[in-house]
Amino acid sequence: MQNMKVADGIYNVGVKDWNIRDFHGYSTYEGTTYNAFLINDDKNVLIDTVKSPFSDQLLANIKKIIDPKKIDMVISNHAELDHSGSIPRLIHFIGKDKPVFCSKAGKKNLEAHFGKDKFNLQVVSTKDEINTGKRTLSFMDTRMLHWPDSMFTYSKEDKILFSSDAFGQHYSGWASYDDQIDEKELKFHAKKYFANILLPFSKLLKKLITNIEDMNLDIETICPDHGVIFRKSPEKIISLYKEWSENIPSKKAVIIYDSMWESTRKMAEEIAETIADRNIEVTCMNTRAWHRSDIITEVMDAKAVLIGSPTLNNNIFPALADVMTYMKGLKPQNKIGAAFGSYGWSGEAVGILNKYMEEMGFELAHDGLKVQYVPEESDLEKCRELGTKIADMI
Ligand code: FEO
Image (cartoon, rainbow, N blue to C red; front, top):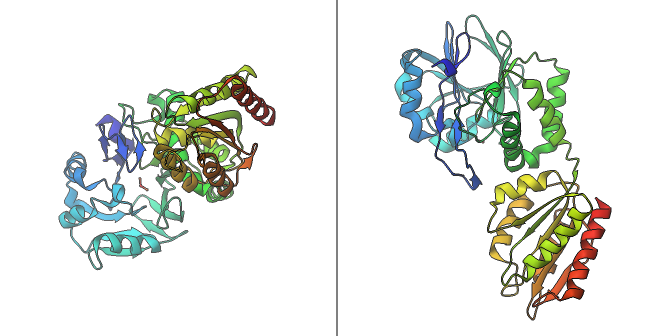
């Protein structure tokens, strides 16, 4: 109950999904949360809801504060089902006449998910305001951050920004606030979230943060829809977003590979050791040991990305195809790339990896290093040369 209170009259009535381990293809080793915020004012407002299987829990949490039937209006900052899934049940409870405020695209998307004329949808956009009694809530369109319908809600009296998915983390520990969690752990979860959800929209984020700064928004608390609420240092997460949205790589290499009979592994590790010997940070990730969402988290701020695959049936390994498809969609920027891998007789994998990297705009540091069957000492020397070249370029 204590942790539910965000400010006087404002409560997080969302739920913790402690045991989810796969959030639409994103590994959530520590679960996630679906935050929803109740504003108990002259008019009672609910900002966002939770995934539909948790709707009973949402109603039970609201009941700890007020009778859910007393909710006068709903704000839907984002139509994705982890935040809109319980709107139908809530509306069934409070009445179809109660307004649901959303963006223009939010109206379209809520109708697409739940049908037309199901809710009393009221379109709002940047600079629109609603009065709830002691508070004025204003809205900010944040189109494509990360859906066309995304928007923020701001309470100037409370200096609270309700930021939808932005600034979120897939984390469901005991902590509900940034002052209750280790700073490094929080940064890891926030970075992984950024890499897997927001990376393709970096330019828009950069602009959004400039807009927030230009508007001189007084923000004492940021309430995202996932993870902990920032009440101690909201400026820190804004500053991290500013840094990440610049896409300026660190002096760091990531090696991603799969292996059939250990040859590509030997190549990967020889390259990694060479880079590490030059005192440069390097992470060597076998796709069978690392989840795609952890791989992209490392790729996000790496200067060099080396990708290795044996040739299997004239193609790359399936696990690599998964990672490459995922990475391409997330549009990492400013990378040096190189491909490597072993082969038996045809050896197409390296060329296919080069094509992926070219399509992503990587600067190729090498034509691609191929080894037939098992690397000999002369092949390992070529791996060391590649590692040295990459280290020099970082
Ligand atoms: Fe957390 Fe885009 O939904």
